[in-house]
Length: 474
Ligand code: NAD
Image 1 (spheres, rainbow, N blue to C red):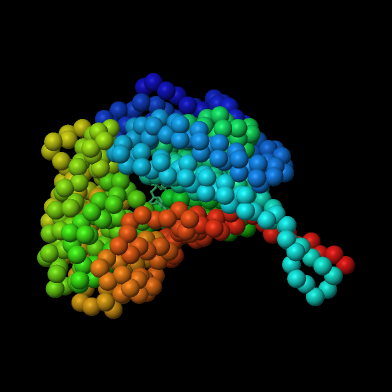
Image 2: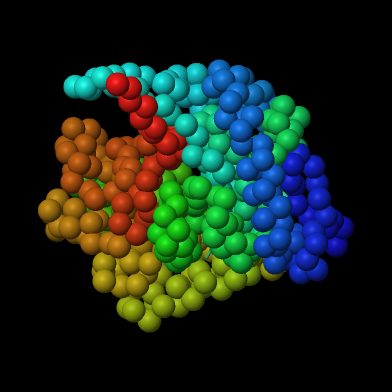
C-alpha cells in the first residue's frame, strides 16, 4: 500500500490523530492502494471549528466576489479534470469515459451556482401595512456535506456550489470509497483561491458522518446516500432542529407506451436504465412494457444490456466496469438469487463474467416475468440489473409506477410526445424524462416519498443555505 491520508482542514493537509484506518481498494484489481483515517470525531470538531471561524469573513464577502471564486474553481477543476476522472475510476471503478463525462459537468455546475450568487438579492423591501420592513438573506452558517461514492464530484458540487455561493462555509465527509478525489478537490479549491477554512474535508466512515451531523455548530446537513442512512440523519436533525436536505435511493420506472419505437429506446438502456454499471440513484430499473409487446421489449432490453461494453474501467471503450466493492457485488448477487426464488426468470446475465476473473464484476442482468410485488421490483439493487414488468393499459402502468416506496426518477417513452407528457404528469416522482436521459442542471432535482426531502440544483438551489431575516422599522 502506498498512500496514507489524514484530513484537509483550514486549507492544508493535517495528519489523522486516530489510529483507525479504512483501506481504499481498486475494484478492478481488488488491490488496496491507499488508506484513509476513520474514527475521526475529533477531526470533525477541528474542521467545524475552523469552518465556523472562517464564516464571518466569507459571509461578508460580496456575492459577486464569491461568484468569481466559484468561476475560478470551475476553471481550475477543468484544467485538472483528467486527474480527477482517473482518480475516481481508480477508487470506484467508474468506466473512464463515464467518469470523464461526469467530471465535465462539474465546472458547469460551479459556473451555474456562480450565476445564482450574482443574482442573489441580499436585502429587499417587503410591502407592510405599518411602518416599513425589509428582508435580508443571510447564510445559514456551517454546512455539513455528506456524499456517496457513485458520483462523488457532481454530488459534492451540488452541495458545495450553493453553500459557498450563499456565503456558508463547509465541512465535507465523503464516502470512504471516494475520499481521495475529495482531497484533490480541496487542493483545487485552494488553488482557485477559496479562502482557508471555507472548505474542509474530513475522512471517515459512518461514525464520522454521524459526528458531523450531531455537531452543534453545524447548521445544515446536505446528504446524498441510502435511505437507511438518510433516515438516521433526519432523526438527528429533527432532534437538533437542524436544516437538512436528503437525496436518497430510488426504484424508478421507465414506462414504454404501446407505440414505443424500440430502436429509438434501446440507447436509453445504457444511459437511463443502467448507467454507470447500474450504480446511479435515478436509474430506470423497472421497465414497464405493454403486455401486447412484452416479449419484444424483453428482447430489446436484453440485447441492449448485453451490447454495453463491459471490462477494464480504464479502457475508454467500456461503459460497464466492476461494482464498487466486494460487498456491493455480494448485495447484487443476493438480489439475483432472490429474484430467481421469487419466480422471475433471468433472460441474460445472472452470474460473473468468465472472462474477468479479477475485479468485482457482475454480468448485466435482465429479469422477465416480474410482478411489482417481488422484492426485486421494490428494493434498490444498485447494480446492472433491470426488471421488465408487463402492464395492461395506461392506468395500470401509472399504478405500477406509483406503487413504490420511492419516487426519484422516471421516464416515459413514445413518439407521441404530448401523450407521454400527460402520463409523466401522473407519476409520483421528483423528476421524470420524456424520451430523454439528460437531466438539465438548471432544473430542481430531488425525490418524493423515501427518495428524499428538498431539492438541489435549479434556480432555488441557494434557498436551503439562506436564512430570511426581517428587519421592521417604526
Ligand atoms: P450510504 O448511505 O451508505 O453512504 C453515503 C454517505 O453517508 C457516506 O459518506 C457514508 O459514510 C455516510 N453515512 C452512512 N451512514 C451515515 C449516518 N448514519 N450518519 C452520517 N453519515 C452516514 O450510501 P452509499 O452506499 O455510499 O451510496 C449509495 C446510495 O446513495 C444509494 O442508495 C443511492 O440511491 C444513493 N444515491 C442517491 C442519490 C440522489 O441524488 N438521490 C445520488 C446518488 C446516490
